[in-house]
Amino acid sequence: MLNRTELVQSIRQKKSYLCVGLDTDPAKIPAHLLSEPDPVFAFNKAIIDATLEFAVSYKINTAFYESQGIQGWESLQKTVAYLPSDVLSIADAKRGDIGNTSAQYAKTFFETFGFDAVTVAPYMGADSVEPFLAYKGKWTILLALTSNKGAADFELQKTGSEYLYEKVLKTAAGWGTPDNLMFVVGATQAERMASIRSVCPDHFYLVPGVGAQGGDLQALSQAALNKDVGLLVNVSRSIIYASSQADFAEKAGAAARAYQQEMMRFLL
Image (cartoon, rainbow, N blue to C red; front, side, top):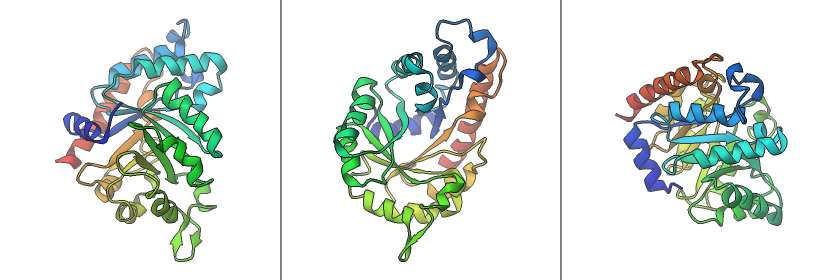
């Protein structure tokens, strides 16, 4: 479990704000691991071991595990348990429902699985998010502006003089604090990052979309870094699938190191 001070210390020590996405697809696991009792966990363990020196956080996209039924949930649980306590573990679950249901989702990820953070959809408003924010020492990561083309359907629509995503940022910022609330902003929205940072200057942003999705690390870093860094840049496919062969972990480590080396330049 990492509070804000500890997270910032970890970023400074590793000279990295890299979050590795464990979007582990059983169909893409190297063939030599398929004989393992739990190929998904064996893959994740090797990736974590290879990238831990360069990453401050790991984001587990729960859809890749839920789709595998009980076996998938077991792989997820073992993966979370394997992560050391000095990295931020994120359940990318994008939950959002009425309050009593959200309370069960919060219990699922914060208590049953022991994640440090969970992604949440804000569409149903404050009472659907409050059960997550009620957990002391945990992080709620709220969807604000995403990278998919469907962002134009709602997030990029104007409500009066502002975009809907701006209203989400301004409103939700009052539900929590920079110590327990982060926002998701897609890396392909780098041109909006400076204005987003001006709306919530002190919050951390979880930024997916660098790497395979084409996000520009330099552009978003220059626009959004703050005094406490304030960014967790998630990279999934271009790290964990850097190779499909027996050297997959070695190549993943090299890819993570390359991102860390680039991030280090922006932290100087």
